[in-house]
Amino acid sequence: MASNPDQPTRFYEDGPCFPDTPLAVAAERAYREWFAKTAMGVPNWSRPNEAFFNRLMLARRDVKNKAIVGTDHGACVFRPDHPIEASRTRGQAQAAWIAIEGWQHFSRAGFDSRTIRSIAMPGWNTRVQRWKNGSIRADQLIMPPRPHEHVDAKTQGMLDEIRQLSLLTDDKLPRAADIRPLSLRRLVEQYSILKPPVIHGLLRAGETMNVIAPPKAGKSWLASDMALAVATGRPWLDRFATERGDVLIIDNELHRNTSADRIPQVMAARGMTDADVADHVFVSNLRGNLRDIGSLGAYFDHVYEQRFKMIVIDAFYRMLPAKADENDNAAMAGIYNTIDQYAEMLGSAFVLVHHTSKGNQSYKSITDVGAGAGSQARATDTHLVLRPHEQNDAIVLDAAVRSWPPPEPLCLRWNFPVWTPDDSLKPTDLRNDGRPRRAKKEKPDKPVWDAESFTEAFVTEKPQTAVVIKAAAKADDVSGRRAQSLLEEAEAAGIIHRWRFGSNRKHQFATTPQPEVANQTDP
Image (cartoon, rainbow, N blue to C red; front, side, top):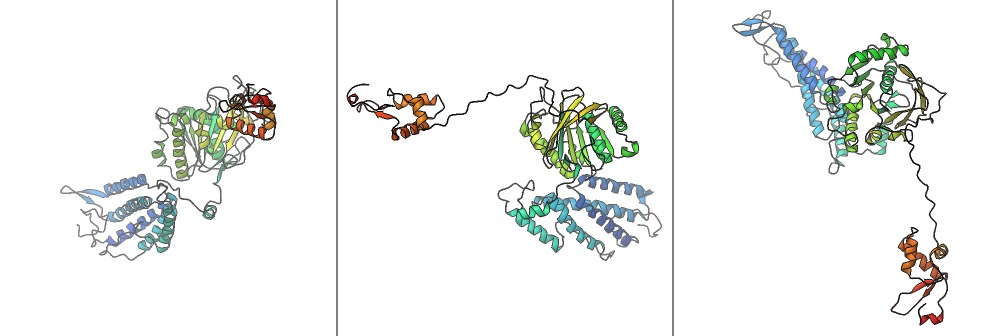
């Protein structure tokens, strides 16, 4: 160690191992300050942010490399003032790692991400601030607080209360997700407001929307138009108000050159300038470098929460895992569940551009339009469909929504490169490109049988056994039990009569009484 504080040192000082050095107190102060600053950002995480920690460790290494000013007999020599910056980067990295450890502890204990973010980590920060502002002595090492070991009494009480609620279901419900029941009072208190709109009447933050249309019908142009409307806060299609925010388009069909050509054409048609959208629409072209839905998790790790108001995936079918079958309801439900997790993590609305199934779509209900399993319509919050109109270059836009009143269908006319509303067209005039579905034959109403109608239909003047009568009734969808009951009712009412022929023959029924002489002879 150099004796002169202005001379380089052979020791890299980024920790409390050198209490006698001139910068020990200042370095500890920098360490605490940047530890606390990093800890303050942890409640904004949506999961343990290991990628962030890795970046901090790289920055820590870079700071060390920059501190080297030469060598002394083969050993590195460092700037004399380097401990300040070295302690700062150490504080940042250690805060991130301690937060990750704490987050994982709380998660294993059964707490959901929302509780960890909004209660546990702010409580930890209270202790961190107290530690940061505490006295500093170069000869005394005071370790920083840990989230799962050092929280204030108020936070601990809140966590204990939540833990007691979770114990109600620990032996019955899996803890992989927060599915604990809430009383109606707590539900209404905590979730009294719907998620904020992105496209009024159609889509909210954290929701998903399917955009379904036939191949080559202009749905990608429509999706670009939607993205530009949200990016500028202008009404989409002059009908649906939007909330302004940045938009990410993940396109796996178009080359970058094509996207760079198409989007400005839509901008020009809508009267938008570069200043309106150039820094608010972001495009990630994945053609030739495809990703599936599962691998997008790593991609989204680099997107911080609420960075994008809306994320468009075009086309959805090219994001399906290699072995996934779009006709498999269970598989598609799992894929939509993954998208819901991304939407919750990012606070973004997701728009999935997909194609219709083959054949005539005009007779189908809204939720039946779309290729693949029916769970695709049920799993999403908005199922928006585009079907050809009877007139050329026109479509009918319709949607099934979950958190809005049902929207009115809208006719659109293709005016390259955008779709515009055309109120002169009727939404009911859908083009029928295939054979119409054969109408089901209406079945006549089943008769309501009583003793009299049953007797008139199945019992004659000539005596018959109950077996014969029931067989005839069965042909008219009268069950054996019902026929027996009606026989008994008719006999009790005197409408039919029982004929007896001795112990060796079954009795029979007729609408006429049995003659006395018939008691000894065959009918």
